[in-house]
Image (cartoon, rainbow, N blue to C red; front, side, top):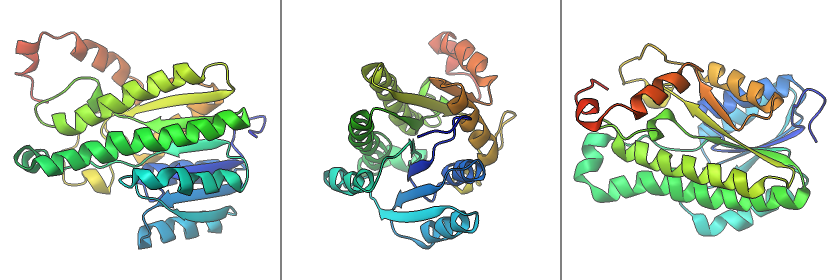
Length: 251
């Protein structure tokens, strides 16, 4: 269960080597989270993440998890919940893809959609059912402002996040009254390994900034968190720009 400050005692991270996920886990461990399950494809990065959290005092378990292998999600994630209650699930996996390449390679575009949307739908539903059986817990879904309106420069990635965002909103409505809290996090540009080759933007964030926003959102049981918060107003304005004009914007 969460403590008086809203800190989960146990955490399951889907996408355990994600920089945003690891920054969030570090912050939660510093605030008394004691058990962390890092779910992801076996890799040196996943092992390094586990070692880092162990050094901070957490009991860490690595879980072999593949977003694309949706048939395995029930068994793999079910075993985690069978070991003990999970207070928070952080869904942090996803791929950016390469827009120019993916436009020419339908199977590459499909992979982006399968990881970011299909895999996330499957994993979220498995975890939501387990959390509902517990009668408590939070499911935090990393979405993106890219899903707010399709842009020419990244509409394949953006469309996958738009689907995920809509799904998470509906899931939150479905779970209302069950004791399970769903929180959608919509970061803008975040400086990570995935985006290091991309141009910086004025409202760029870091994984630590996103982690701080996530923990603050948990404390107030927010349904939606924008990172940084002014993006809420930026995206509201962009949604209402007429499409012919929107096409000409350098974004």
